[in-house]
Length: 278
Image (cartoon, rainbow, N blue to C red; front, side, top):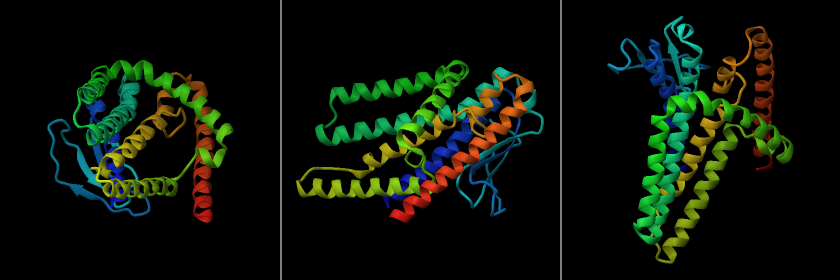
């Protein structure tokens, strides 16, 4: 049960990622044609139109699809091309920033919930909680500055970290696919259930939801940070476009496609090996 709950929250985090892009588009005057709250029209070409009307998104169609492995935002044709380079960086960066903020909130909920179970609501827990929520609020207030200066720097640093992880941990330990992610969540759920059983045996209050919040927060942070990887189709690849000369862009696109195919093959192979040895 906890596994399904965690997966549902992670799917909502993906939806929030796209809503972050949509919010930024409207702030920068980019009209939006379609917003998928959940799902992509691949393999199963079925579209469920939602009866949502919003003054923030006039004329926007809200949809869902059966293949719920992501979401998307489609601007009106030609609208995004009219935006400035600075506005494009802001729009692209808002998706990962929303994931980071959601991840920080869930990590703090997990920490505070476990601390309250153990010690009750102490002044330290209260102050730390207010401090973390204040940091998230400050990140939202300064989002334009963070998008313009911090996200490009994180994108470059992430490339260095990925390369180092690849060589230090090995390719199949460094990357996991959907099966690996679900397996990790399931293992965490099983461990949480075991801890809860032992806590009950000792007469200690323990709510497993707090522990699941930690993995939801971690995955949301991972979605946000990994999307800053400076290759297409990740958001970081679109950020990189603002800094790469036009004459080099086609070559960069080809390199990005090659790297993405390589990473997908690594993730799939990792999943196959995980299933085989399991």
